[in-house]
Image (cartoon, rainbow, N blue to C red; front, side, top):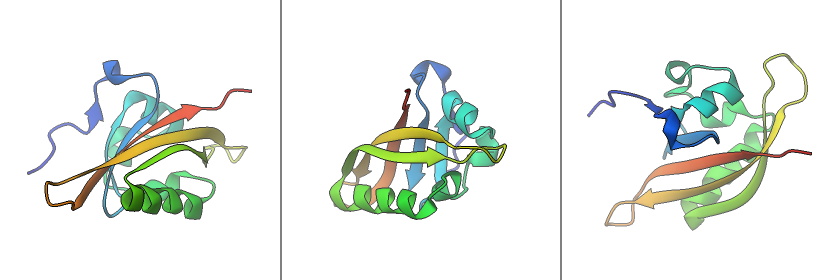
Length: 116
């Protein structure tokens, strides 16, 4: 089944939202995710989630933890900056849904910007 729309309605929330499959590929985003990454939903969809961050290995660690434990809270990451400058620091809160047989299906992750 093919998704008809890969962007979550803007009313979903002001914080960046990502839906990620078990292979680490982005499946859906909201407008705030487009804004923080500087990429459109079509450009984000089916791409590697970890490539969006200054430390892809740390982003991969977050995904592995979510799939193993089912949830993460306040996991710090920094989105890459499109202009080569300092990235945007965020904390992720995310969970993984599973089928009735316990098979991992999808991660739902929300990034909260860190303000100083």
